[in-house]
Amino acid sequence: MASAILRVRGLVMDFGGVRAVDNCSLNVDEGSITGLIGPNGAGKTTLFNLVAGFHKPTTGRVTFRDERIDGLPSYLIFRKGIVRTFQIPRELKRMSVLENLMLVPSDQLGESMWRAVAARWLVKRQERAIEAQAREVLEFTGLSEVADLPAEGLSGGQKKLLELARTLMAKPRMVLLDEPGAGVNPTLLRRLVGGIRRAREELGITFLIIEHDMGLVMRLCDHVIVMSEGSVLTQGAPAAVQQDDRVVRAYLGD
Amino acid sequence: MLEFLTAFAILVGIYSVFALGLNVHWGYTGLFNIGVAGFFALGAYAAALLTIRPPLSNQGEDYLYSGDLANRLDSLPVVGVLDLWFVAALVAASLVAAAVALVVGTITIRLRGDYLAIATLGIAESVRLVFLNERWLSNVSRGIYTIPRPFGDIVAPQDYDRVYLVVVLVVFVVLFAGIRALVHSPWGRVLRAIREDEVTAEASGKHVFRFKLQAFVLGAVIMGIGGALYAFNFRAISPITFTPLLGTFIIWAMLVAGGSGRLYGPIVGAFVVWGIWSGSQFLPNVVERLPEAVGAPVLDALESVGLPNIRFFAVGVLVVLVLLYAPDGITPGIVRLRERLAGRMRRRARA
Image (spheres, rainbow over the protein chains, first blue to last red):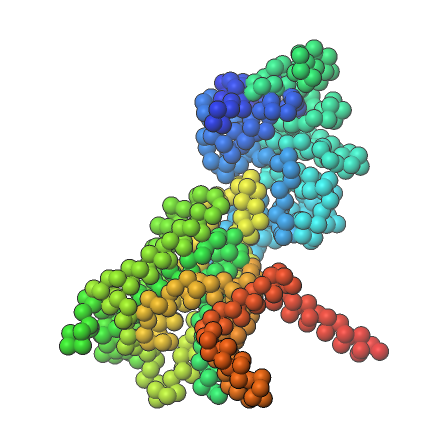
């Protein structure tokens, strides 16, 4: 049994009078590809926002690699190795695909104003290394041909791949993917699935994936967690979850 | 004519500095600062108050503070010749603008949306009103005058503008080179990412607040330096210079017309807008040469509307035209035109 890389305990998130996440507890095993499914409004994306530090939880705790991360600002959680994508891709429109990726590495020398001016030689050397890494990731995700295009020119599917590429660029331990398959054509979807699998096998990255396409969940995930009304309804192997009456009822209503 | 062109070039240079600062704010980071006049005024007054001679009580001047730095340093050997007090004034202008930007930014930059716009507008007006009402500080609406001339000993007073043009150009080139290095660096890349989508920048692990604050302070410092250059050019400043129209709108018009987020946008915009602005003073002369039947009613109209209003109107029309037909500003248009001409030349060379 693999150990849990992410532990969520008793997590609650209130937006005004609405309780989006309600006493939610779950574990994600290290090295797994875990699916997170559930009807609209179940609190899946809010859970992502809480784990990645985009919201502060009302109560509850989140532990990543045995370290509490709830309430930390998102850039610090990013540095601990959790990177998230967005349901609707949020590419940096007027920047090239390559720049979208070169932005990502943390602690770049040239991110300091002073060194950007005074130590340009060192910064340029690091830039070359970062560019090489970005081109590798573009190769990995099959976006090499569009590297120098502005990101706003990409197709919907390519933008999804760019979201995945952005997470890989961060050298993460864990990636939260929000509906990576939505609106992606079958060819690109195959590439996406291949990319996620290879990232797990070759880089040891743990994936937590929100997805509505059950076919994709069946193909990709080794464990599925079902959320409903803000907390975990059930979980288990994909095939078992699919047979569960409670899951069907949660989706269709009683 | 040469005098006019020199004075014109000095002001294009000074306004390029302001637009350069605004480009750091809006063009590269997406910070909506509509209080440029505030940092402009802070820089101008800081530089002026640090360098003017003490007030003369027999002329009814009763402001309390004067640095008198120009006189004090001029008496020193070497330092006096180099006019280092001018550098000190630029540093003072930077520091004052930076301090205010740091306070305002720390409070408002964390907030989303238009709060920064409201705050900057409010600060700019507050700054202007303080200088307008505090006699001890700024001599109220009479303003500060007899501001000394940097490097004024080099030439005769009537030729001084040429010296000051060189001074302005040197300051501008230094600032421009610094900004160019910065926007092409990873630091500038983070700023552009924030401009495009703050949330993505955050999801890419960037401490967005820190970068926005740095950009805000840097832009404000550049505007403060612009204010100092402005003060030394006119040698007299008063609160009337720092109204939203004269101190903010015209600089926004320059940035938008030239091309926001473009390296050369501020220069192109300052040239075009200041060209319209100062060129419009020749309008009556042009109209007078028209045939009487056409000219006389136009001249009457000009007189009743007033030249200042016509200037603002012309700049406004320019901004609207640019936004409609070249939303990225004039600079990318020039680049495309040059490429097209180069292509035509190549084709002709082949033919």
